[in-house]
Amino acid sequence: MHSGKIDPTTTDGFLGGRLRLHQPADGYRAGGDPIFLAAHVAAKPGQTVLDLGAGVGTAGLCLLSRCPGITLTALELDPGQAALARANAADNGFADRMEVIEGDALAGLGGRCFDHVITNPPWLPEGTSRRPRSATRSKGHMEGEGGLAAWVRAAVRALAPKGTLTLIHRADRLADLLALLDAAPVGGLQVTPLWPKAGRPALRVIVAARRGGRAPFVLQPGIVLHDEDGRHSREAQAILTGAFGEPE
Image (cartoon, rainbow, N blue to C red; front, top):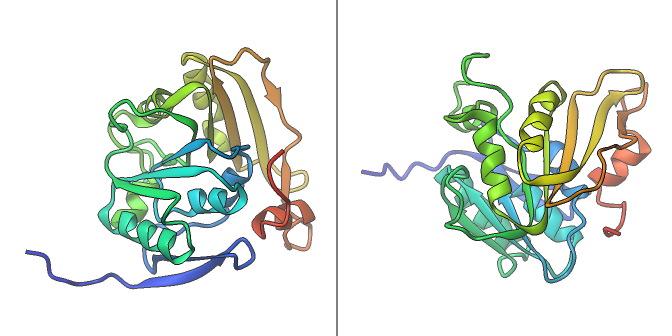
């Protein structure tokens, strides 16, 4: 029997306050990663997007805010996170353009295909780190059955012909990602490093690929996130506040 207990949440601003999103006060909480992910998707009016493992909908809502005329499906396993994603869509005026489905990202959506798939997969293979006590944080950080390979297969399977996959992950998993994508029916791979400061090793990478693509691999210039004084760089600040403009 359901206890009726509601876990505490916070309401946080994203894109310079253009979005106000409810998040769990304790557990997995969105930071800059989903914003940078959404900023690297050139979705056009009339196109469809799948946010695979959407959490409270941060990446998808950032993309909806930036790209008029698109529709987005958010697939999230955790019931509490899915409920918050629905509330966030409604509260920010995107209920008519964002469908939230509670389900397993690795199982897909029964053959439905999308023009774009975006995802921020769990970071760590099972057994490589202690599981966080929070259930939502654990799901957000630890790979489940099938690991990263199953996540990539599910994402590629959901792509329409010539559809794009864009994901953000830890830089130390880049070799694994490239090997998995090399074995998948995608091409035109592009990698964008995210450096915490100039001269420091990248901690995150954004990887993009196109189903059936044949373009050569491109290593993009990348983005320095912070100046030496610790403040966000001009480029990072423009992305985080949504001031960088519409996709080309």
